[in-house]
Length: 134
Image (cartoon, rainbow, N blue to C red):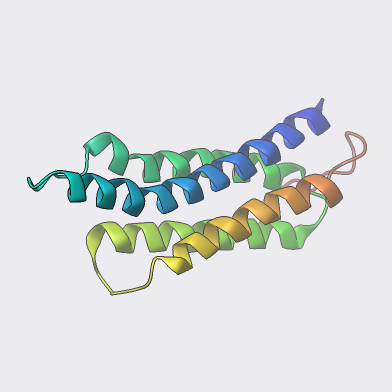
């Protein structure tokens, strides 16, 4: 039972991270192509902007569950660290605090997805007694 839940959390987390990355790549392409067709200045739809935080929330829940069932303690720190970095880059982008290239947020999303895949492949419990619990 625990194994299937942890696998789903890692799969869900990896997919959420990859969708977040696709969202980040699609945003400039979609709005640049739209702006070249239209002469009116259009604001980004609010539903599109909130996708960032939706992906962060999904990713948070997936990491929370994955870290409860991982067999490697370092994975807890890596997953949470890269989630915190991704959160920081997205928040910085929304609030324009410091001028940082978007590539760092993209890189954080890629690494977070890879960490979920690694955790899924190599760090899962084989029975109900092996998991690291706090």
